[in-house]
Length: 633
Image (cartoon, rainbow, N blue to C red; front, side, top):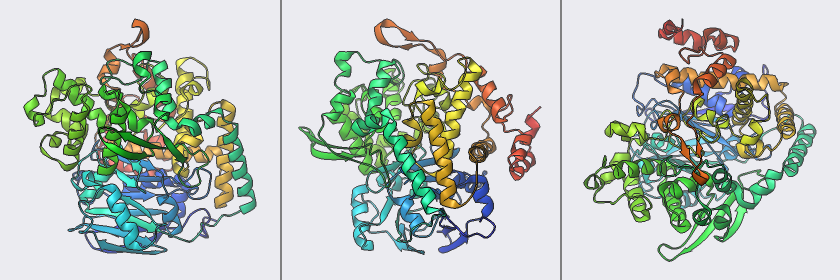
């Protein structure tokens, strides 16, 4: 099938838009790309490695912005996922973000597996992609609009309410490094500053519509696998939790384990008299008007909250999960849910990554210690729990107004401005979203250290209790358990199915194995490609190492596979005067991980022989040509 290039499961084309040249072209999807990287994140990481100019500034026009679908996008249960990738302005290394909504489905139906935007427009534009046709349109009249404003305007302008819109708000326009790309009003591609890359290219939005269904190789076999996937969902006790309260159960779980990030990582537990105000039950009381999901979702973990606030009036916030609410609530010592909801609403409208709350938490601690002065903050009294200060600051950040400029280049920019901040900053490789303290769950949260895009819970996502039961309880077994979840999560990203549905809500080893088996069956029956789970995991491994190789070219080494200084040196206070000790066995875990993944233990550089064994000869040659292997003894 691959040699004939008759596509099943894939649209079969990549769309290239060069804004500097005002040109649009499409190329066939190569069989080697399918064979080696499968789709989605794999496609994006391979294209980014090949296209990015390592020596250029992160905001140079040649930094490509890539939108990649997967072979199961628009087909499998919980599959409307999309990877958006570029070199990240916020971390200065490999960047990608995964987002739901309907964009992936519409892009494939329009005839494209991948969209690559290169160059930079001289004026604001948006892209209109409609059933195999693409055009660059003027967006001067849209520049300055918030996310809901521009989304509504574009749906009206293209004359099709079924179209999907990926856009930026004021934060992206102003090239704030914490800007997100927002899909279909409320789905955020966040954490790596993809909105800043889009804004720098002067692209206000990409609007896409397609009506061509993706062909399936063996429809009866696929239907059977589809039905089995639904059956697995229904057997999972965690599915009921997801439908009832979404990811907000994690507020309770993490507090019970003393694993919350509170006051910038200084303690991890809230006593009952305080926690009752921000627990899952309290959140669920806020008029959950309805629940919904992304395309083809059978989980439906989206929460739609309606808040009638005395301070802010009546407003609705949709698709708000644990990871979006926590950084804007108790991490800032705010325990009024209405204020947390409103903070999230502001971020959504302005196109800000909600994890900017972690940067504000850092600044609150610097302010507390007298490192940051009130006059530097335009007179804002940035004390813990001051919701007014947070809301004023969010607007200033999005518009780069006054003190907002302190946040313009993300957490690394704050550290550059205030070097003392480095010992307080809760980040890895510049990424500042850590939802669960690693001191409280060591094996599972080893993921923060080795993730290729920085401190990231989504690079290895599953129930931490499951990770601990997969292999022997010694340290090598613990790392193997972690790697099993990392491999499955990476594969999920290649296929572009939902990490929550296919990994995070997996409650037993039996369910883990069932999901592996059904994913293989869905892929093979959809595409006609006959791959085993080992073949697919090999593609996942290949993706992990090409991302690591990209980071190596930027100068990252073993020293960067670390955890926040506070995690390594300070105990974490928790319930009843107890403590989680500092994270002391990171080096031992890294040694095991590097050996298993074929990475040099001394440097953190992928071994030449590993890359060649994975068919990445050209990557090994590239690193060798740059003199990087001279560091490997």
